[in-house]
Image (tube, rainbow, N blue to C red; front, side):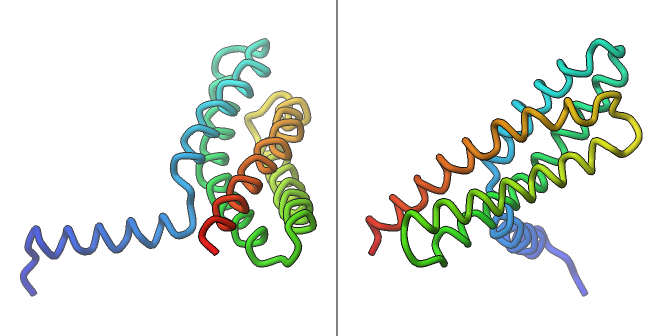
Length: 144
């Protein structure tokens, strides 16, 4: 079978569309940078290497799983009847899942302060998810 740049482009385009279906890239990138810097600063007192390790773990988690959690948030908020109930339920479910997963990631070897590294997520995630869910509901209302 002969591979051409056209077929490679089609495979890349299909793969990109598949991945974008599950990850909200702009939010994932912004979250990864912000949360990575915050967690790195929290752990900096233990040296640059542990701080960098913690920051990289947080950034990678936020990019991959945070992007997926936002897609899950959108799915729940659009599927649940009742605007207020949909917002509350979607934000609650996604925030709890995110906080638990972040804590588990930081309990893996390499993060000197796993609980302290999870606190920014526990504070910022519900707020950020609330804004995103509200924006999604508002945008969906305009469509229908």
